[in-house]
Picture 1 (cartoon, rainbow, N blue to C red):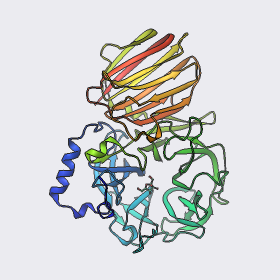
Picture 2: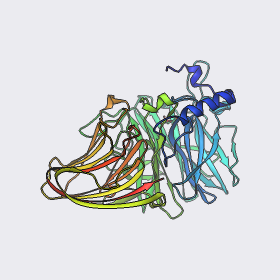
Picture 3: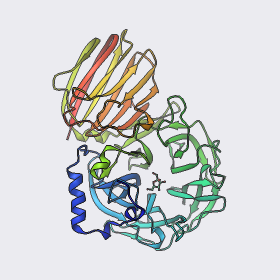
Picture 4: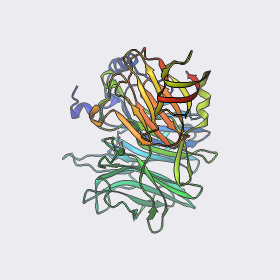
Amino acid sequence: MQWTTEQRYTRIEDITEQELTALKQKVDRSPWRQTYHIQPEMGLLNDPNGFSFFNGEYHLFYQWFPLGPVHGIKYWYHTKSKDLVHWENAGIAIRPNDDIDSHGAYSGSGIEHNGQLYLMYTGNTRDENWIRHPKQNIAVMDQHGSIQKRKTPVIDHVPDGYTDHFRDPKVWKENDTFYAIIGAQRTDLTGCVVLYHSPDMETWTFAGEVQTALPEFGYMWECPDYFDINGQGIFIFSPQGIAPDGDHYHNIYQSGYVLGNLNVHTQQLQHGDFHELDRGFDFYAPQTMEAPDGRRILVGWMGLPEMAYPTDDHGWAHCLTIPRELTVENGRLIQRPVRELQNLRGIKMEASALLEDETKTFDSFSGTSFELICTFDLEDADSCGIEIRVNDCEKTIVTYDAAGQKVHVDRSHSGALADTAYGSVRSCRAEGSQITFHLFVDSSSLELFVNDGLDVFTSRIFPSDDCTGIRFFAKGGRAACRAEKWTIG
Ligand code: FRU
């Protein structure tokens, strides 16, 4: 179905109770509803926003277009959790119903200040000629969860030298000053980020553009984030317009990081190479927060803009990733599933076998929502791996090709296909005679952590309901395999 502009800008407040119920019922009948991932009740979810810990709870908001699986007028939807893994829907947080956000409450971040949670976000507005005028706005959530918007923007115009692609403020506090980095596009149509500072979250001053060694790296940088882990600065952003290069950059848009410390006084960022955060098919616009115990936690959008997905026909699209803990080890960012995910573990199974050029199933290893940790010790096998969500004709394959020194995730036979224009295999380098795969599988997703968080592949898959099989294989020789599996849900 083609959505007209008018339909995309229809607000949830303007439809009837019956229409709303019909939309929800359609989604309730959908296959592929997730069981432990944050997903919209209906409509389209995109970026995680305002991820924070406030008043004893984690708060995670997301971009939401309620009325269908398209990018229409965006709301902030609020979810909260005591443990990062059991989330409760808390309703709409920010409605795009003022002059300062008339065409969408776009992405932003949250920070505690004066005993309240300050949410800084981009108000997308358009004039009568459909020209965009982005505003940076503040909404404040009190201890009772009530959210009030400031009626005037805190940054009401784009500084000279930048286009109207100017959005996604990420706020942090250093000493007594608040800083915000904002994703931007220069007037020569290259991407960058700019820095603002504020003494009080109300008055913001433009400091300048962040100076990087990536002056021409795509045409727009969305959803920037900056933080440090034990003194090591990390700058995350989502550049648009990067061409594929070997096994890299095969999705429509990328999300990645550089390691480097930002000097907030000179706006200089001395940094290393750009690395993709995720090697899978569906990952974009991540956001991080600091947990009360100091851990740096990341959540991403398990989806990408401008792509068709099989759930579109059922009135909804996308979900968020599981939370991951970030650490820096030997100059590399490592991402591990947060330990709280163990709270979801149900029945445990264990099995091991020496596989000899064969594909094997283990008793009671099956399911559609589970966690699986599997280590292979290769003797003389050329490759080994796991097939999940298997039936007679569908499967999703994770392979370690030891001879070719690569890990592959193949969703070409996973069932209904997401947009195939961007290919159906993703790969990254790996080496050695041992490999560990840690999988989180849900009704329509696979998150694969390779070698204890060295690489992650995040992907939606859309298998048939009866795809419950799990198989282990070795090819061209022998590989010993040990597996532990827990049901989830
Ligand atoms: C990234 C993004 C952001 C914007 C939001 C709108 O996916 O385009 O730059 O704020 O989505 O929903």
